[in-house]
Image (cartoon, rainbow, N blue to C red; front, side, top):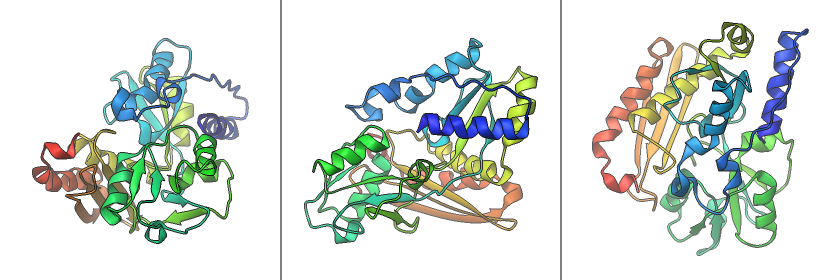
Amino acid sequence: MAMVQAHETRDRLIAANPVLTVEIVEIKTTGDQVLDRRLSEIGGKGLFTKELDEALLDGRCDIGVHSLKDMETEIHPAIAIGAVLPREDVRDAFICAEFDGLAALPPNSVVGTSSLRRQAQILAQRPDLRVESFRGNVQTRLKKLEAGEAAATMLAMAGLNRLSLSDARIHPIEPEELLPAVAQGAIAITRRKDDPETAEKADGLNDPDSHLRVRIERAFLATLEGSCRTPIAGLALLQGDTVWFRGLTARPDGTGVLRVERRGSRADGEAIGREAGQELLPHMDESYRP
C-alpha cells in the first residue's frame, strides 16, 4: 500500500511539474515489520513515521508519503504536512464470503481486526461476537480470512480501491453504522519546513477541502489526547460553507460509547473539532485509555 501511495504522489508531482525527476526511496518502518502484536503494544502510530522522518531530516528524502490516519497528532517541529491529496472513500469495508454485514454474523463468530476503534464499535453493536487481532498488509489479511482464522475482517475501502481490489466479499459500511478513523482515506505529504524549493512543488498538490476536513478531525483527536491505545473515530464533511462533524470514543470492550455531533461554518475550521473533543473529554475516565 505504501508503494501504491508513493507512485500516486510521484505521478501527481510529475503531472504538475513535467520536467521534474522523481525517485522513490522505499523505507521499511517498524510498524510494517512487527506484525504479531497490536500497535498499542509496541509503541503506537509513531512506528509508521519515525524512519521516514529521520530520512527527511538527514536529507535522504525531500518528501514523505503517509497514510494520514497512521500519523501522530504531534509531528516533529522541523517537519510540516505540506499537502493532503484528494481524499479517497472514507468508509470501512466488511469482508466476508458468507454474510454481508455484522448483523448477519452468527453469535460467537470471530472478526479479525487490529483496530481498537473497529473492535469497540463491533462489540458495542454485537457483544456476542469475538474480536481477534489481525495485522499485516491487505493481501496477508485476506489470506488469513481464506484460511479460516476468522469469519470476517474489516479493511479501509480507500486501500482496497487504491489496489483496485473488487470482490463479492467486500461490503462497504456506511459511517452511520461504523464511524471511520480520523483522516481515513487521506494521503499526507510531509516535507522539511526549511526547504522552500520542495514546498513550492509539493504544496501545489494540496486539496484544500480534504486538508480542512482532516485538520478538523485531527483537532478532535488531539483534544482527546487520542492514540492507537484509545478507540476514537471522527468524520468531517463539507456541505457548502457548512462543516458537519461526527465523533465517537468508547471503551475497547464496546461499553461506554460517547458520541458527539457538531455543525458550523468552515471558517471556524479546527475549532469545531476541538469543541467536539472538549464536549466528550469530561466523560472519559481511565477505562477509555487502556
